[in-house]
Amino acid sequence: MGLRVADVMTTDVGTCDAETTLETVTAAMLKNRVGSVVVTDDGNPSGIVTETDVIGAAYSTGDPLTAISTRAVASHPLVTIDDSRTIRETIARMETEGVKKLVVVDGLSIVAIVTMGDVVRHFDEISTEIRHLERRRIDRTPDWAGE
Image 1: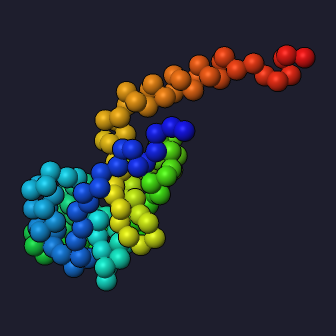
Image 2: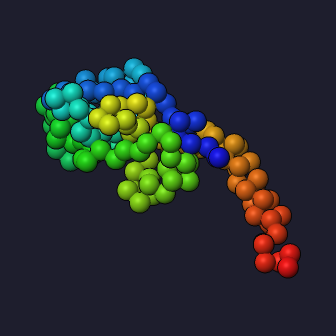
Image 3: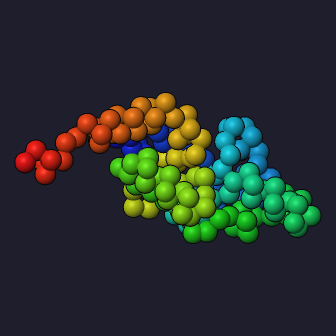
């Protein structure tokens, strides 16, 4: 069946309201040793703020982080994935969307987050799975070859 998002995702997801300042978000990211926070608007997930977003906002505006809301810098729309998707589908979605983090949702509920780091941490399992699939493909005799 293969590795799925549910096998590698992180269920402890930081969130903040869209009006939260970047100073507060940055403090939470540092305290929790995470690289992103999901932004909510009226309780619903609406975007994501990453370390790169914080650095870019601070550099481009020159404003203190206390003066910048997460709404102003959050990546929109929020790129999501279902926990039943395969790691192959996950990597393809990240590549297509140009992101390194996908929020795992069930409807409008945040379930977890899956990052490129999560995928890399499971590289050995993924490599083993690929080798297994490759061996099955090579060892499989096509139906037409037995005739």
